[in-house]
Image (tube, rainbow, N blue to C red; front, side, top):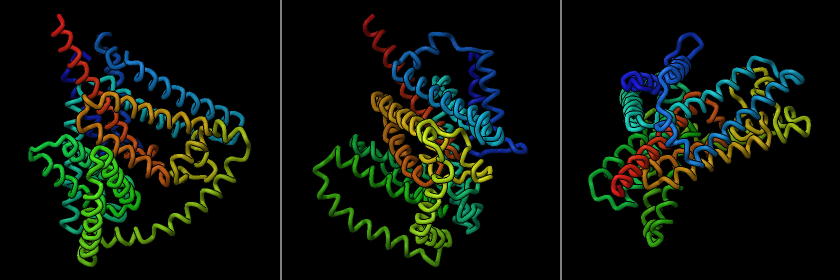
Length: 413
């Protein structure tokens, strides 16, 4: 895209829509903006050399092929079961198109990787606005979410909780990187303050999923730290156990005084009951949907669970089971390979990513944990936020790497 102003405008509007989800009837603004952005990009193509840098890497090319095969499998199974099975055009094609849209969004971010710094800045600004909105709800005692505080443009507890969780994991990744790199600046204190603020926001959404993801991510961050500093193990045990007890006492001390903490504790107390209900539901759905052997291998097509249940809302209650329902074990293996390939690419480029590497690892780990009981990579708000951040991280790595390669070439010339 030759016109940088137009490029930045469209990117800015797209990220704005991803974060705040303005709607026009039954459509979200980002649906229109993504199509418009791609059309403009086609009209004003980048030069071949600019476009090739990020895609000439064999691992990125492999990632693209994996995503393409994954989507082709989903399309093929959906068409087959619409023509010869029990699937209906609506909602199957709707869910299929939406799934494709997430990867198109990811691809569009990569195509504009030269604006990775601008996109990252916007991502943090918009996340900051959502945090301020959350704190305003906490301070006023008036929540706009289903159980606790919500986002601007979204009131669902899981959606709100997991977007705030992403902010929490990003702050935790920056703090972890600063500690591992022995950063002596005041940034560590700032990261820690952001961490506590986002932890409060996550708790105040009363989302059990987000709270569990936050707790598990804290554990994995400690594990990463100890793997890099194994001699801190005894110190961590000596400090960590009393600190955990103190944190629990501090949290429960707000019981009866802050309504959002009460709601969060109440929701967490229902965790075991919710788990048993899900186990029963999974068993019932599996028996009803996977009624013939080939379905386990290649799936039954997009939205088969919705057709089986007769609903347009998500209800499989597991990202991994939904993939198996729709694309079989083959589809699940492809999806896991996509995530692993992303990890390998970012790990290989971690020197160019800085704190974004640990942030992405922690965000993705939390998403994978929540995927056990929620379809987090299908929910619009969560999926778009994740793939946008992932595209920015990958684009940032190659943007910095490209600059480094140019400096090396100049030094050799």
